[in-house]
Length: 358
Image (cartoon, rainbow, N blue to C red; front, side):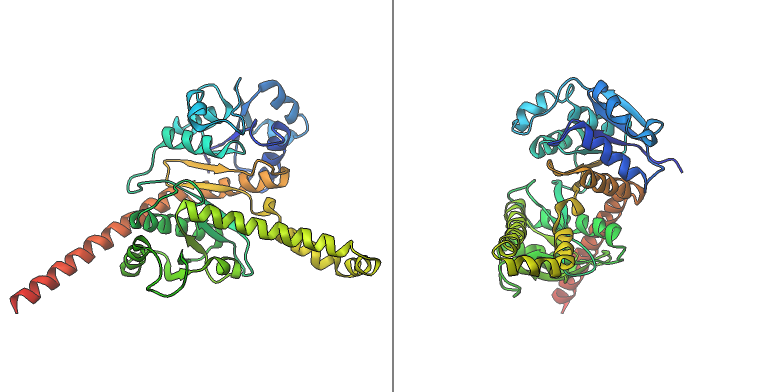
């Protein structure tokens, strides 16, 4: 079966062309049916490809003279979308020359370009940024939104829940992932009016391929008791940064402890297999690849500091979402949501008429 190729912004990220091409080459070992459109400086991409012969026949180069810088404002980047590697990669998705785009560049610019070029799919008011976060359970938790929308109403949160569940089904293989709303408590009376409205809507919804289980507090996100955590971009970004900071704190604390004395160094040698397991589990490269959900096309954001293995994970996520038809799945789930809402309104009207006739 012929699959749509993946456009890779080869100039994005801290390491640029070398790491982006190497990451795509690593990902292709497990997704060898995919082809790539490598966007950026043609001469530099060709030099990078010399080290990856398996990519030659699978890749086409689209030359881009310009690059979006890491500190560039989204409004400035938008004006140069037709000349930058990021803008041309997204435009390839818009034109149908690629099925998805991957970039390790400026997150704000990537979101602005993607929203303008691809637009939101029918039934979605706002796209959301979703990422995988490690847990103590068997599966990563999908969390969204992580910064695309600082303010969200109940309708946005319900749409995020539907999109997050569709993404989780692909990643976890579960038929109905557990979904919860991030809140300051698990009691049903806790939270803002918008959270209460979203929870009520999700409890009443029928036909959706998800299990809505109410609220979750931030300290339970990593426990493995939920597959999808839904929140607004403001709270989500704060929660994500706090989790990342806590992981780095634990890692740095362990390093300091093991270096504090000769006995500690000896203890490190004994416990090294366990500490290596912790390091691997918390390494962001192993969970790399945040997805902009809700657009008419797939756009994946890699960490700017990702190494080749991290980029490979982002590309692999992109390939899997294309293979499993993420966009089509979301559209089907939205149709179920709308059908359930119509049926619910019809049932409520019938009940009211019945009451009036008594």
